[in-house]
Structures are given as structure tokens and as C-alpha cells.
Length: 354
Image (cartoon, rainbow, N blue to C red; front, side, top):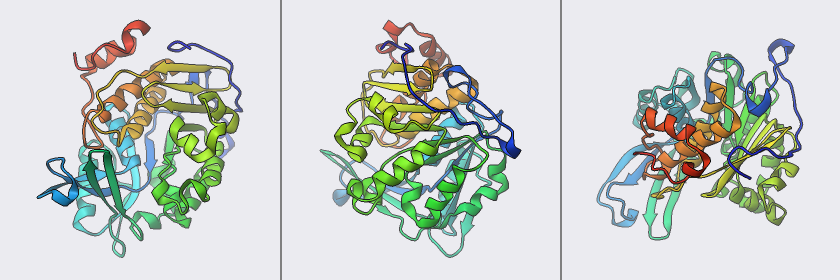
């Protein structure tokens, strides 16, 4: 299917609203975001140690301290795209927590909803680059964010959310975190859920409870983002193409399936819209999914049709793919605008920076 081409897609709509009032999604996904309030991203962010020269950890003489977290990464890209963004979480009362808070806030994200836990540490991630890719080591058991629970949803930082953004990382952290996600899905906000399957966080990986838990949570969300590769890892050979995921997850109002460097397809109850990915020289893929989510959500927040929202997702993901950190610089605004408006035949090949 060509960029923005419509097709048949099954889906079920659900209207939810504060105080019983309904809100509904218009054609192409416009109207899914409630009002003009902030996109509130809830989940853990860790400090990250990255070898400074890009060599393997065992040979590194020094490391740089960075910030790593799917939800805050999405929030920082949203802020850069001009969308009000808020991050809600917990960090330890330690220097790493101070560093995380300061760095996320410096990107223009509202961090007033992040609490400091005096009894638990900030989580830590260590990157180990190698010839076959970057291995990641997590030190997050018992972290401040792992103690988050449903009570977070009653905080003032969440109440005015235009959209609540969650990922499949959070329910893997603890039972209280899983309860938070489940209760959020029953709340008054529209909820976007990025499946973001991390096998190392789930006991048994794809052979444990993750497939059932993540399918249940995703099918209850209003908007779901999922990679075709992670869906195949979770739900097996029955997922051969993006359309198979729509059959597996009929509940979301909007389902976005990312097929790596090939394309992304959005399904709603009326149509399917496929936009090819742009050619990008990949430095490291970590963080690209979070960036795509931010671009796509920014498009919805602006009221863009699906094709333009998907293009914005691809452009934002491209910024992350081009750097070793989770967050890369976006093209200049005029270049972004030109690419969003480019004819289909020019979309894939035009350089983002030129």
C-alpha cells in the first residue's frame, strides 16, 4: 500500500471520558488525544553508563553518564516537537537521581510529578558496545521506580493529561507497577501503550507470562505501538504480517505496527495507512522506538492525519538511529516541514539534514 493508502481494517471503538462524558476519535485518528493538555509519560528512567570512546566496557578507560528510560525519552522528544510533555516517576535520593531529574527537565519536560524516594536507589543501566551490537546490563531491582503503584494516578500531575503514555517495561518491574498500568487502562484518560518487550525483564522471557500479560494490557489500551519483530517474539509464527496483529489485538482504537526499516502501518476501525520508512544510516537502534512513539503522538496531538503522524514518527526515529545515545537532534523545523509535505516518491530518498 502506498503512503497513506486506505484499506480495510477491523477494530472496535471505545468511548471513555472524565465524569462519564464521552470523547471520540475522528477519522484518521484525529481527536484521540483529549484536549490540549500535556502528554503524561509514566515509567522508570535510569542513569546510564556508556563507554566514552564507544569501545567495549571491559577495555574502556572512562564512561560518560547519560539518562535512559523509554517514557522520559518519549517525553523529551515530545517537548522538542513542541508538545507539552510531563514525566511521572520516582528516583532515589542520590546523585544519579539528581542527574536524571536535571537532564530530563533541561529538555523542557515537566518533572514536577517525579518523587524522590529516600529508601530506594535510582536504577542503573550499563551499555557494552561490541562488534555484534550493544549489550545492555540493568541494575534496577528494588529501584525507586519499581515501587510505583496505582496511587500515582491520583496525583495532580496526571489529572489533566491529554493522553497517558505507558510501556510494557513498567508491568515487568513489579506487581505494584503492573497494578498501576492495569488501573490506568480503566481511568478517564486516553491511554497509549508501547509494547516495548524487553525479554531480560520478564521471568522466562517470551516463554513466560509476558505474552499473555502484554496482550491483555495492549488490547485494553486506546492506542498501541508495537514492532513486528517483538510481536513475533511474543506471539509466535501466527504473526506473519502487520494485519495479523490487528486480528490479535482488536480492542485498540488505533494500532501502529512498526516493521523495522521497511514501513509503519496504522490501523483504526475504518482504514489501514502504511508509510514507508526513510533510508537511514543506523549507528545504534536503542531509543528509536521511543522516538517514533513521540513523533507519532505529536502528530496526533497536532490533529494531523495518520499519514503525516506516521511520517513524523519516522523522522523522529531517524534522529535516534543516527546517534549512540538514546536522544539525537531532530532536523531543522523547516526541513521537517518540507519532508512532511514531500511527494511519496521523494519521501524515502531526500536527506533529512539537507
